[in-house]
Amino acid sequence: MALSVYLDGKWVSSREEALVPVFDHGLLYGDGIFEGIRAYNGLVFRLEDHIDRLYNSAKGISLEIPVSKKEMIDLVLESARRTGLDDCYIRLLVTRGVGDLGIDPRKCAKPSIYIIATGIALYPEDRYEKGLDVVVVSTRRVRPDMLNPMFKSLNYLNNILGKIEANRMGADEGIMLNAEGYVTECTADNIFAVKNGELYTPPVYHGILEGITRKVIMEIAREHDIPVHEQGMVVQSFLSADEVFLTGSGAELIPVVTIDGKPVNDGKPGQVFKQLREWFKERTKYDGIPFK
Ligand code: PMP
Image (cartoon, rainbow, N blue to C red; front, side, top):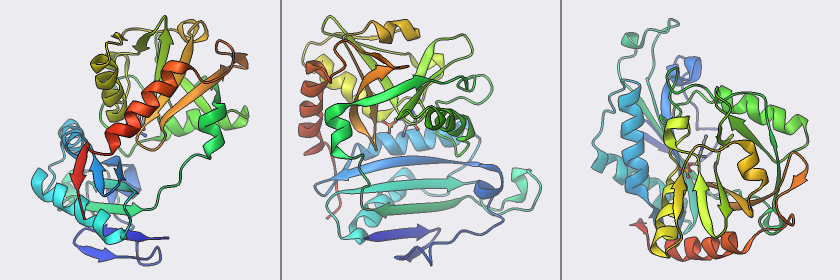
């Protein structure tokens, strides 16, 4: 498997060499932030959006990234180039850095940057054709006034607990509600409903990660005169929808065909989803920064 790893100043190309110091507060406390990025056809898709979100997450946790946005873009492009692949997945992390065993971030001399670029492990193709079975999990999404999901921090235990529940129920994914009972997102993807040819998705203030794929889908829909509504949604809004699908850099667009064992509409991926997926694929062919 083609692999390139940047370890805070050093490049390695094997998993055995790709090791982080055990005193890194990213490991000890989940103190850090990250991005999951895709490259298609020699272009890193929407890289500037990912870099902007990364720096915004950094601000949100009072972390000063030690390189400029331009330098970070160059590091990501170099990571992708070193894989020798045209299509790859890039995981970019900035941690608080190496400290001592206390949580105090002031003990960490400087943030560490880690980048993993490798081949893409796609969901099996039949999941895109047949769709996902999802369940509503009881783990509530962390409240925005406690740890804002808008900041993509390394603290994913809340999502992982939701995923464990979904796994236990034999489902592909778990829908997470916020403390008030509104749908937020799935454990690692944003969620959309289609009703009467219009798109609906939960708003950022309900406590979601503001996904870049979500943003691209909303842009594409509006360009094709499909109205998009960001509004509070309960589980019933999804159960009564014509179509439901998820978005994420890893998953791209993937249909949901059952919720808690009940079929969405006729239990098959819908036409609006299929059309949006085509338009999205087209977009990945040109909307990115070249690395070759
Ligand atoms: N929500 C969560 C919790 C995520 O971790 C992700 C990223 N995997 C998303 C939504 C989708 O965001 P993006 O489209 O930027 O990948």
